[in-house]
Image 1 (cartoon, rainbow, N blue to C red):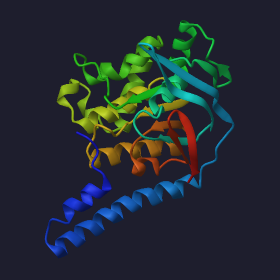
Image 2 (image 1 turned 45 degrees about the horizontal axis):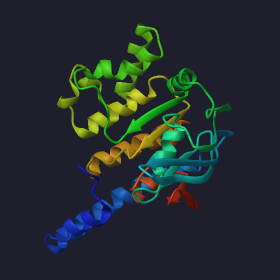
Image 3 (image 1 turned 180 degrees about the horizontal axis):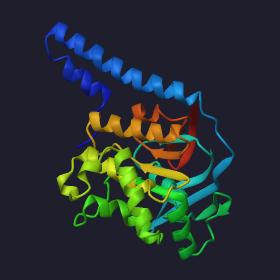
Image 4 (image 1 turned 180 degrees about the vertical axis):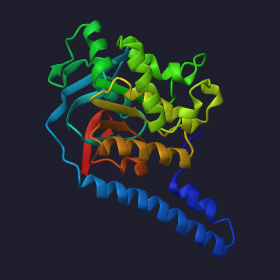
Length: 275
């Protein structure tokens, strides 16, 4: 299921009786505006620290047969510690490629990427894996929960790779499950969870190793509007507690919760808006 846009919701509401439609639309607008207003109010209480991510003149080229595809073209971006960045743009603009390079899942063709004062572009595969495990948490649109493992074990997987003490990773998994409101589902398989529960669980999993940076690729893309709002509010709460977040999104509503919106077009940053 995809997220329902504001325009679609308003169009649906307009199908009903005039008074009912007006009341429903007022209620929806109040709920939506309240969530954004709260986010903006909390933003004023936060301070952005020193640079934690530095992307310098990064380009990424792919070969498709005899054709070269320029996914990124000379992108430069700095993210402060504790900042919430939303990366927007049309499909094919380079958003996910940029996020994968920041997250050490891919390497640029040229340019430099620095995470926590560590230049990643020349690190070995094992060093990159270690950096991902201890500094970066990932949230994907498709959840990627292991289908034959119960939720408790799914949440512990990052701690297994990081060789965290089993008792400590279990304690941390339970704590995070409570935080994202899925503690009562710990013995269930992913197929027994709703889409919203799976995405909240995926956020808990991403936080298990206490990463410095949380990367989210279309985190509400497979959710309906209600569950999407709950997930974006959860990310906002994490941000209010000091987590650095870089989020790729098509949703202007979701982007409105960020400190800064970075718009890509044809592999280049064309506009930046500070909120």
